[in-house]
Amino acid sequence: MAGYYHSHDLARFPEIGSNAPDLAKKFFDWYGAVFADGALSAREKSLIALAVAHAVQCPYCIDAYSKDALEKGADLDQMTEAVHVAAAIRGGASLVHGIQMRNQATAVGM
Amino acid sequence: MIPLAAVTEHRAQLAALPLPREFHEAAAAAGWWPLRPAAITTLQINVGKLCNQTCRHCHVDAGPDRREVMSRETMTLCLDALARADDITTVDITGGAPELNPNFRWLVERAIELGRHVMDRCNLTVLMTAGQADLPEFFARHRVEVVASLPHYRATSTDTQRGAGVYEKSIHALKRLNAVGYGDSRSGLRLVLVTNPVGAFLPPAQGSLEAEWKRELLRLHGIRFDALYCITNMPISRYLAWLGESGNLERYMQRLVDSFNPATVDGVMCRSLISVGWDGQLYDCDFNQMLDLPVERSAPGHLRDFDLAALARRRIAVGRHCFGCTAGAGSSCGGSIE
Image (tube, each protein chain N blue to C red):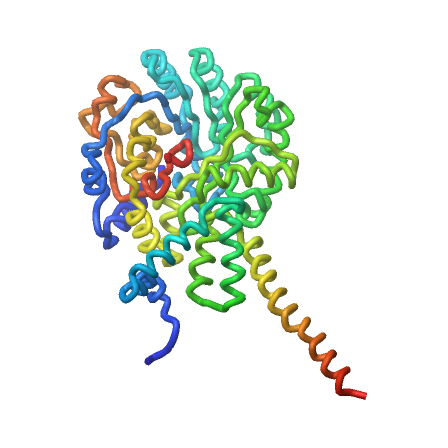
């Protein structure tokens, strides 16, 4: 294996249905429905997806939803703020565990 | 006009791309070949390439240094043609910045006298140029529909596409238009905003975006407008050059071809308008005009010979750029087609 994460593999995503077509169809149908205009607009959902893509650090998703957010009418300022939301939650998630650390330190410390 | 060498180069650049099919093949497969007009209801008059802006996506290559400006004599030919063509109900004036043509207001007044609905494709910042301060009142007095360009309701993308400081001036211009009644549904003075993508991608879904734009422009600036048109950038002139320089050309054209939507062909603008160049030449659309593709030879080629019945029988000239009008939800002078 020469390496992981090739950008051209993103377009091959449908191949995941080769060995479990019924499951893949359910996934892609559901996926499409999730991103349609609803109580949230397609643009808002695209910005959420962009933030989540950064939280789960998926390069395919980052490529896909950077373009998608632009196509849905978001601008770079809005997209950057979405990434900050992801970063804030990730950072906050680490920091809030500091309370767990403090609980343990208090329990065993003098 | 754009130097002929540049037009030839642009056409060659598009022709050299390895695309899976040609537009006429896609149209034929969808049952639309040869492509012919429906009812022709609009005369779109390009009154010149002079503009106070130099936008990066401009298919006209318009700017402050352009000298191609329609004369009053040619405008008179436009009005003569209108007087003989009752079926043409709308006059769509474009440029450049059409208001910078010294005879712009004269043309508007004469077209209104002929009982036509007049639309002006306005870049907004022209309202801030010398001698144009009273344009909002002029538009309102003659009930001109203002179709104004604004890439985004926020500054970043707007200034990226149209130049530093354009957003602030555009917002100021929109407030002035609102002040004379534009955007207020009770006044009947229609204000439409037009957005083009700021990059190598297709425009957003028009319906969904319009609600957001109305909410945000009202929240941010207290601005109201009637409708939002989302228009695809055409691979012509300055935008074509940018696509090439940025390495996006082949991918963008492939995207347009892959996104061909047969349901949009019925509503493409070339089926319902005649495009007039600054020198009186006739074209199927403003894009063909900029590629120097005139109406087919059997049809009248100049305003002097204007004959609506003969033009209605013509075959429309197409090329690879036409995939821009049929991609996704489609794109016309009135925004998305679907």
